[in-house]
Length: 120
Image (cartoon, rainbow, N blue to C red; front, side):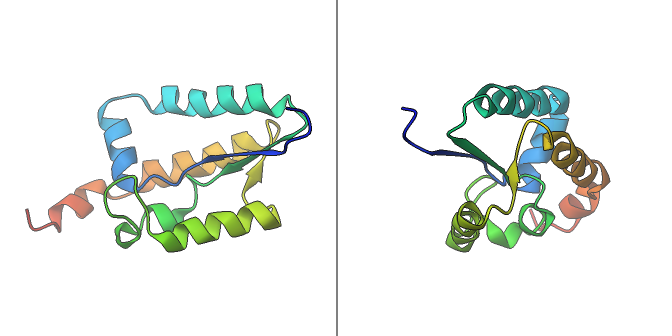
């Protein structure tokens, strides 16, 4: 459908999701998925791609989530505003910078502190 503009977005899964990714030892595979999808769909001139996993203010605030992947309606609103403004839009050329930011968030996050403060 060359006359249709498509919007693809990578959602801002919570830091708990990223803990699971680390525990399952597939961070690099997950990153490669982002790269692969972006490379494939960026080849089309009618596709816009938005990347939210490195939005630290979202992913590290568990109050934004009902569970580790379902976020508050305010986050949906923010993402749709980004679709309109172009904020958080990525290309195959700049995705690497966004992925590096995401890696740094995950690598530096204090998971032990998070789990120690939970009242299980």
